[in-house]
Image (cartoon, rainbow, N blue to C red):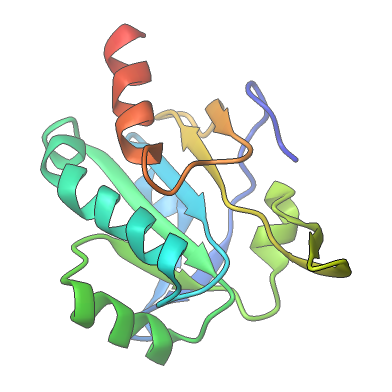
Length: 153
């Protein structure tokens, strides 16, 4: 997993509308990228809604919020509409970006070992350097933890 001080790899993925979005599109702004396992699951929905509830504060601080999962753009579109999500959702079906950040890892559930997306969040500064990493982000507190850490910085 990438760590604080690493340069964030540039990438290009489709958003919920199929429009291609690059990380470099946001040069000069702070960016929060959170990786999550799947649209419309309980934990992922709670996490998305905490980012939605904090979105005005992120926007006021000129911080871009991006959620990335391996779900399709259509799935993201439905998820965003269902919960009125105001931020960017990107589709990474081949999990290339998820892997590049180190969020594609071995997971164990009910004794079964599989590979999947580990809920993790990265805060990237205006120059593209990772300034914060939340390797096992809590779906209920992740957005507020980021804001609290930014206030202290």
